[in-house]
Length: 247
Image (cartoon, rainbow, N blue to C red; front, side, top):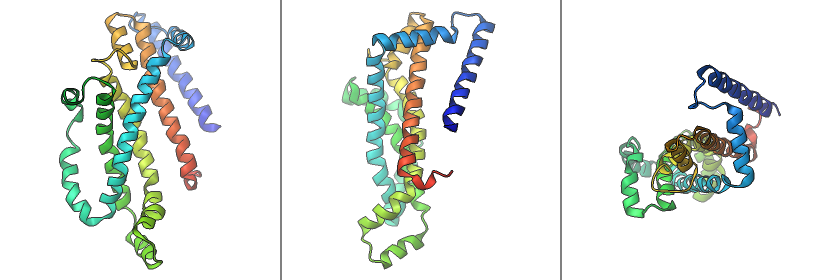
């Protein structure tokens, strides 16, 4: 309850600052927040925004899910198995610093302008964030824990299931929180051209028509999407990492 109350008051403060800035600037480029909130509620009620919000949510979730499915197993292996880590780490050092967003034209050429190319780019960028964090979390596990489980006769699979994965799970969830912001940012980029659906398209289309209320409605919707994904991960952590509930 305390966190919800803090979030509520923080939202009120941000809206108040927005209102003050809108009054001081007195510009059509910064409409008052109540106009945007009314427009957002109207479009959500009549369904004109629901489809675009659903499409953007699907793209973001699919990208994060694809990256998670690939990065977590590899990160656990690289962080736990010394020989695998030695062979894979040089590729991570070479590929991670590359600004992968510049690969979008190539990805569109290879996979077309459909949903998969957008999902793939989100997954590609988020993949390395989750991979590196998972690897570092697995590396941080003290080797004595491995020796203890081997002494008790645990198999390799049991070690990963009962030691490595639970120990790295908080790190993985932290990486996913960071990935939410990244995925929403990349989502705007991939939806800003070569598409006619999604919140990114709404933002760019409203900007081109100088419809600033709709522009801020799109921005607010994208911020709401990121907030919902972040809160979803927070709720998941409360269930799967219950030993951390006392933080």
